[in-house]
Image 1 (cartoon, rainbow, N blue to C red):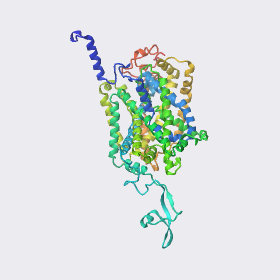
Image 2 (cartoon, one colour):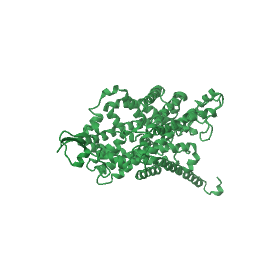
Image 3 (cartoon, rainbow, N blue to C red):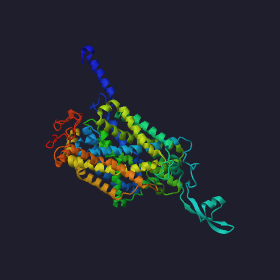
Length: 638
């Protein structure tokens, strides 16, 4: 710098530094990586990962699976599957993202042939993000609707029909008339104001007020997917608010979202604890807990293959592996962060949260069964029916129902937002890796632009047929596509790139470990985990059934749309593999071989971390062809 233009050299340097920081507020002076930025604190990362892994499924899927698969006995296969499938995949993805400091697409410099796997992960995350925020919008709507002296679904209202009732409804019975004993239907009874003879009544279950409120008021649900109807304006506004919250939390990337998660990741635990204490004081709560995980546990269930499949599937999806988010969030860690201990802490926290949430849920469902004179099995629901029918119904029966309802739906809101933050960060991280100069100058417009586009795409999910779209996307995109990506991920990294080589990469970050430390991880990565994933995939294919919403079947064109969505996500795997092979040199075998070697710019992002093994690598910040190694090119030194 010219000293004549700046009397104080050091002041000018300081001014220059501040200006650079202001251009890229994703980075501050304490960051190890001045190009991409790092988490401000270790706790920011841990809470973001916990928030990403702990989501709505922990509250409405795990408790039902536990109850349905033998109660406490289900914890045995659940724990085994955590050790054999969940934790190995989780550790692998965290290590991968941290080592290269790259998102889920660019990180496939490790194996250019499989770069389409990263694209598949990001595309599936985009589709899931669209409908996940719709669920957050539902939670917002119910939370706002709870700000009344009496919950609107506490009793049948003007919006309900004749089937709305908490008790069984008489459909037919015998009555005495001047013409003698006759058998009449309910309509005749109502018109003639007649009385049934005792013991002659024929009953059908009534629809709970909360069920009719969910369908007729909240969703304004149409008769099927083919009847789109209009956009439900209040759900659209709630969806817009949900996206505004997400955009506001992420406008500075991890620097802002890392602070928001201190509330959104921790508050659900406060609410669950409060709900558990309240539930435990209610009459009948012990009966609910007994059904969930107590004396009603059925250990004979462990002999059924379905139970083990459910345990493996729940662990796999609960930890959010193969969605790209774990790689994206871990890519902002400092190079020498102990990603091993992080993986252990986060996985255990996620699983214990699931168990803990079950106690809170079933204690109140037990009370609901008690006051309705039913068995717990008759009031247990899963998915949307638990969150927006059964639980609201139970809360409406409690003293101070509106307060507990506000608390419950605010908890669902914070649970959903954590996962949504990570999903959007996955998308923006991918854009940052591909267009670093753009993101350095225009992070806010790009982030808000992503939120706006996803909001517009999500409007179809807040029409009167919206719930059918939500269910369809969840059924197809959040199923096979993720399994395919996970299988190819572990096969590519462990079997092609090399498991021992990947372990050497990890030891560059966390320090050398004795061979016995890696014995378990080698067994899982090389054999057990991929075999389990393949078995789950085959089972899913064999047991595939067309999606339905309740008793309503989807039209053929709706099923075709679902298949089109999943094909669009996974088709990039062969497309990108073909592109990479075409761009390589040599005959077909030489081209494939070169694409199965790491790109020349694979390795640690910063030069000071590359050591002897990666000292000759090309600077990863430079735009280069991933297939730079020629046919006779050698691998980067190990």
